[in-house]
Length: 348
Image (cartoon, rainbow, N blue to C red):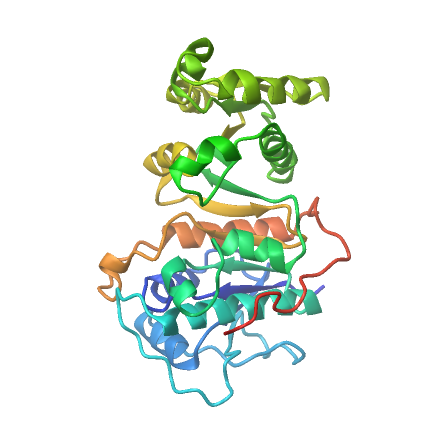
């Protein structure tokens, strides 16, 4: 059988996405022959990125065409309709950067819908740039769920010994308590339970973080853990899941590190990501759960502060590519015949 094709979007061109993409591909992060890669982005950006990494310019490919010979990497410019070449402004928030990032994501989703690609690895985007370009989305995770018609989805970060799924994702901290519902806790935990099997994790015990310090101290420091989290955990236990909680967040990550838990459910973004990035920043990977295709990403942002300075660390991107290759060769527990629909959110 022919190796599966994985798309790699370059993210915001004013960030470190192009640099870490080609640095990773140059180092051949996967076993030869297990996958083929198509870099999706502006032709000039691809050429500059390949040159900076000391790689030859990949051959051109697009969905519906035969794969170019024995090449392991190709590139596809979905914006070949005569627009001006992209201009890179390192570290700047621009509508052009958001437009190209959004266009690449839409193109990758459409190629997967057509069956031309098996999954994607996405370089970091800037949400402000996306919004300036007219893409009113909270993040790539939510956008891909919308494009694929996926209702139950989750954001899982893996790195080192930690696997952390978030109950709430890109929300202001003030909005978190109302968003932590029994349904949300249940859904995140069930997604993580399935993901642990997909990732071949032997330890299936899941620890659920408390929202409040000391798990609320019986309601003295907030009643959400007593009123919401604990009942959700007990209901999951009755379903047969190996789950414990609510457990104070200042203890649970140490317990996971010492082997008690195979996965953790965190209530909000920084509660889960701060410990994981402290322990495994250079190898952390973001996986979107629930999609009918594989999607991974590095665990960091656009790093505008070092963009264009050749200082970016590619290792998280390399780990994301490697994990995508591994997962695309396993049975996706959320795969159905349903494919992502074309451009549910179109260009402005």
